[in-house]
Image (tube, rainbow, N blue to C red; front, top):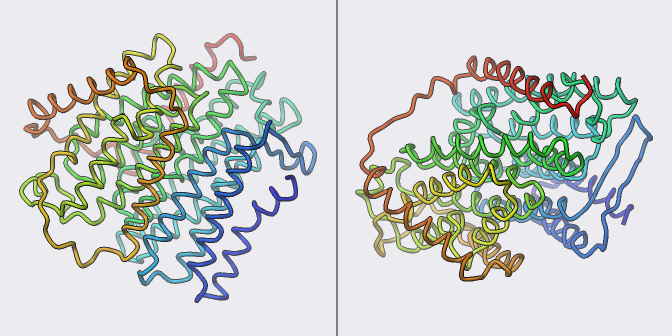
Length: 484
């Protein structure tokens, strides 16, 4: 298994360069790598116990592979496969598929890293590959959005790197376990970098513009898997160190509320989905012990929703409510929206039930409000007018193949937590959805409130990082379990 792990890690990067040399095989090789990652994740699920690798002593690479890793890896594999199938008949060049492979491999690496330096390298490679994919159309707008993402990401990672050095100074090791007993400034700096990278709380306000202005398949990759590269280490640290659990849960709750607070008032489809990505990442952090299953469900449904939003006749909900969409597209939208709202028979139901059972008492009210906001947000899609009209000629040839992979995954993953199907568990989500729909029709459908976007400007994003650093330092400083 150790040899297989090393080969699996290196293969996407090797194949990425091969794709550039053999462009006629680009999509076949890329899809093959996604299938190999699926097989690797499946093997981890079947592994009786987690295992670790240490390649270069304290200065080198520490890897930990377990069930949590498997959930995130299979999410990356399925979303990547769906995006490749979606782009199959398009005119994407070998360069595009090469960057998809670079992104896929580096995201996989973050899901098994157990030391801060290896994680830093993987996150930086993600930044470069994501920037190149965002800027792929080479328009002025796409290049600026890509550069903005790159600048914010690199600034956050500078804070992170300083924190990693301070951890090493305290323990002569870069291992995640070194957070225990490290100075509070080290923990604050590392968490700031991961919160910004993962799109968490106000540090994630770079995300709506980046995800909404990228090409449709790139948006699906960014929201489906890339942001989870910053979330996964937070979940891992919370599970390894009980002192970190309350901190991670706190940011999970605040993130869920912030994202959904913006989403219910948003009138643009892709921006609404981007804000909801922020909110759903909060659910992953709010209950770290089951974060892997929720991440899988969210990755599949959010990728499907971004691909669906890309084929709608408009991004404006006001215009969509006046223009019927094709019934087949609407059915796919309803399935995805039902899943993320927690409707039974789809994996979103099991994920929400399992997550709610692992909330602490102080989290329950806030997370129920976030769940209600989710139902309100996706009522915007569910109640769009529709009729059997001809499909958009611009529909990608692989669109329905991608939908089968993603929506089929939601149905199959529903069996992960089949114990959720009790009368009590079914009634609560249905009541929440019904209440959300009622609130949508009575209040939010008629709302003309438009939230300001000034805080999403580049200079404000950097300023917010400084405020977040102060908040993080204060949180860590006031927790007596940490050495100060």
